[in-house]
Picture (cartoon, one colour):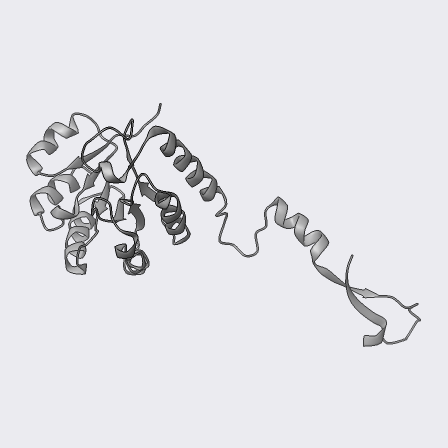
Length: 219
């Protein structure tokens, strides 16, 4: 399997060791948004960064972003979401995803911490994809009997496979943003659906076309 390695880092002293593992990206917890030791050490690695910003103030988020903009060449993604073991849907504040998107010219991700034994992870992640989210964090455990950190919001392997397939299928349905660009099915639809101007009388030389001589029809 070609799986990228992502490492969650919580203090700066371990970063030199983590670099020997050649990770694809770092994930920084929201607890370290105001921690210059972690932010600066990760920034100078020039690796991609998933920056957790759940339950964080604008000032805290801006401080962390500025650290990376000044020192890092890696791609920065803002990850929205927080853990309440599990997080109740009523407190998700998903509108903050749009706020982040409007404030910063960065990709926005979603860290789902809803009940892993329910259908909510499927619904909520589908919903935020419609809000422009393209990066998803989902917890996984081998069986639901397995205990550990974030177990309340973790899926088993079977559910995670369903979830992954759903996300890929939904992503393929997004298409493009260009209103003048049509895929093959849209072209078929246009061919039978759109109307054309039709002249239905015998046209005589030097005569004028009047509104009564024409109709707008599907052809």
